[in-house]
Image (cartoon, rainbow, N blue to C red; front, side, top):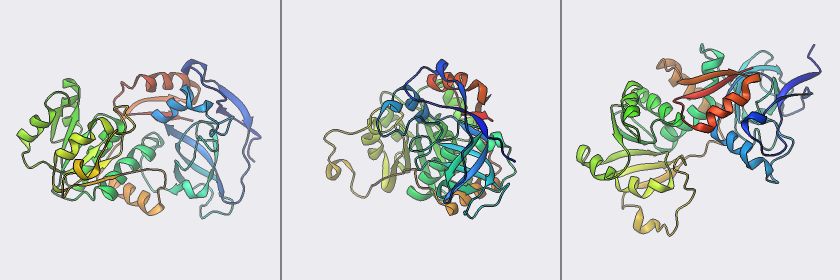
Length: 327
């Protein structure tokens, strides 16, 4: 018999990390098209920090709201879905934690379309580091960049959580990986995590990259964003692809961008948006992770009652790897 109540983080207005508290709320009831999940763990994402800091005030956020755009756990009530009670699943995106309550809770009622079966020997902690981060990296590489054995992949923003995941997955696929960072210390770490080469961002980056790789990279994962996209396009080999996935540089658009003049002839520009995963994509990603013995990089682990501390760390954006919260 399920309990009638549960603990959750609930936001109604912008607040500081220290103001995040656990509250008692009613247990959600299963309904057609939705799946009730016992949340075992979830990862912290920068978008959730932004939600707490200011976005929750926007009218399109369905308040009060339980944050959290991803989680892993067990099916408690499958309703009319394809799932079975007790099945291991992950859930991500699709309005989670914004249009309807998300994962910062003991239980989550989620649309069946954003819930995916997982068959994995990884612990709950490791699984929690995968959904949004690794799917974003996997989708960028496999779907948008069509990464293949022997490709030279440039990852701009390599020490981000998505960047580190991309390095691991790209090496598993069989590509050569060059990753970038602004820190000399972190450049050594990038090689420890699998990058074949690490180059510092900054002045004369283009000339320094082309000195080493005069033909350019045939695949570029752009995680810094609009502030470096023009340069990335000029670092791409003939018939190469640039995938714009991240916004680490804090620039959200490009003024006076002329695609005809600024996308070199024979170079392809695409992007990746992680809002619409499919079971087939999640299964393929998990198979690659399992077969390649990839273990997600976890920066710190917290319990749900230490959510404020977890958010303070996420706010600093200084950690290497994913911040994971167990429930």
